[in-house]
Length: 340
Ligand SMILES: C[S@@+](CC[C@H](N)C(=O)[O-])C[C@H]1O[C@@H](n2cnc3c(N)ncnc32)[C@H](O)[C@@H]1O
Image (tube, rainbow, N blue to C red; front, side, top):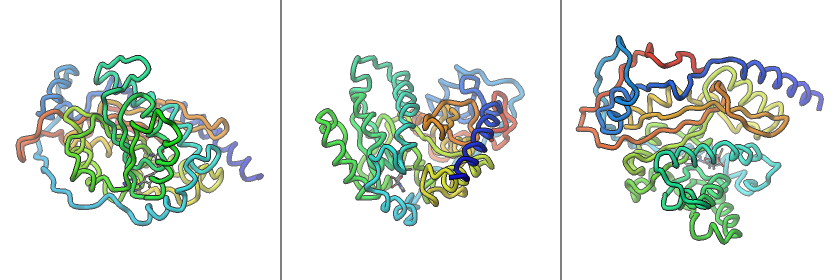
């Protein structure tokens, strides 16, 4: 009890500190690397729109057109979520923070898709689009996406979570037709569903995967050209260790102890670079902050702990072995060098 209070106090102080720390790049001012040098049509289009600065140090490197054979599946992660498979819809339970995260991530996905597709259909604004929710768990995010009119396929390797998701959405006649679930991995689905989706969502999932290359490659395969990839995840910083693991798991018990492994966190910079190497360009990155006192999330400039990312699959296939990419030189204009 006492330690909880102390932790909350420390959390509040640290939150103040991180929120007031202006470390994040502004999305609108960003001119990202892939966009600048990607030779694919969409990337060229964006390059023209965003005007590269003079003196921008770059070199051309060859990207491997990768054959990724690894799996995203980490058996330890599957066991962890298996043990929680019945708890998805306990609004005060282990997944409470995911429920409240919907207040940010659902509008983030909706508005970016509306911008991309220019749809304006009252009531069901995303009607006609297909979304793949990777690592859907019990359907906490799949359901509100379905209510926007989109067809959602939620996949998760934990069969019991998928059963929980199916049961829950079956109570809502509006969702029965539109939201489906499948117990499988992304790599299994990628074999059946080439370029089948307008958007892929992986919210609070990449930090649980065994192999991010396999993940990015499969997302590339299942997305339509020009399709959107939405990721929310945790940055790999000292602060994310303090907040995401020590405070959230050990002190405040917002999520069960052992949920996260700091080693598997990824910075927005590294995630962006990875996605670019698989033929995406990153359109937006926004910091997110959870307030344990109110249980609410808010957008922050700072990406030091949690962040949301929107990437777009470039429209044309690369010529084999001929994809232009940005150099590893991080000293780029329009890019804040400190993401932490
Ligand atoms: C923190 S939960 C997020 C659930 C859901 N995306 C949400 O935000 O409500 C992480 C989910 O990723 C799933 N997961 C773990 N490994 C996975 C993999 N290799 N492929 C897809 N999902 C995976 C887990 O089973 C779990 O449901």
